[in-house]
Length: 428
Ligand SMILES: Cc1ncc(COP(=O)(O)O)c(C=O)c1O
Image: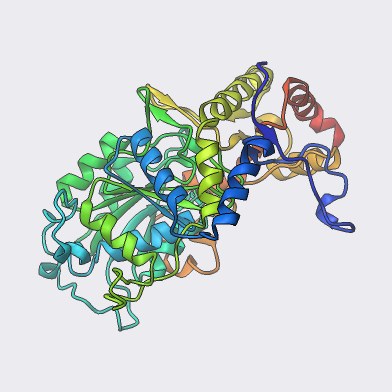
């Protein structure tokens, strides 16, 4: 395995932290540029006193837009805030970009049919949801939060059990006159079928919003994911391949949506100190932007490392009965933000949860993403239509297990984790 030029931050726990006890192989550690590389930049930012709205944020936005091949990459404080602002910016109740009055061209939603013909009008002040957003349930809970925060109703649909991503067929079957948008995700960094999703969105004149939280480091036919769809929203929290500390990027080709997000992250203020709509403080601090900018230089290396580890896991676990792997579409390259396997209890001999306990007893930390899935989360279960079964989602939620991956994992650790998995039945 190649030597890296990034640093993996060692485990740091408070004395007495119960979560620290007995962890030999942490699930994840952030991969960061070496501290010597960041120190002078941090020092410069601190001496300048310009901690926010500064040049590093602008440089990051330009560098990311170039890498992704999009007109706009707007830096925000998190992926969740980015998603919230995107749904708000699309002004789904009115069927047009709220910020169209700013006169930008390249508007992704200007051609959308007015939803008022469906009887959906601006009713943001009322308590009833405005319209429906079709989304996979098998995804991270922030995706549902961004929708419900905008007084929209999530309509949960199933995913492909092999790719774990939502399919165009599932989306198409759930579209009704009340649908105002389509949402998808590159689960675990595995690129979703953007071409098929874009054609459903175009057929119905609906915006397509991609949760690309796991997207940095992933590509399709050699091109980084991020272009296409109305907007793709990335996360740069410490578990991701590109780390800002906390942060997100909204990638879009829509000038007016980008303009709205820029105002939205600034309290809805366009600089005139007159709030045009109720925004948030969604800015990215300069220290975070500088961290992300430096991390961009090592992103390909970090992604290569994860892909090498994924290959090793596949090699070592491939012969075991009852273990399944996430499948990729032709031309897809996963970031492997997570390396998630499935455990078929009948063939493997024990359940996912029993295996998780065995691994934990050997100091190996894992995650059961996404269990519970969105349609069984307390905040969102009442939106779920029980007449719409989600068998693949329920199966994946019960069987998926994400294994440790990242710069802190090496070939020996993979072998160790795989040995424990191979012998787990006898260790229960
Ligand atoms: C799929 C997915 N979407 C959204 C988010 C939220 O990202 P953030 O923490 O930057 O808000 C995450 C976070 O891990 C995620 O995994």
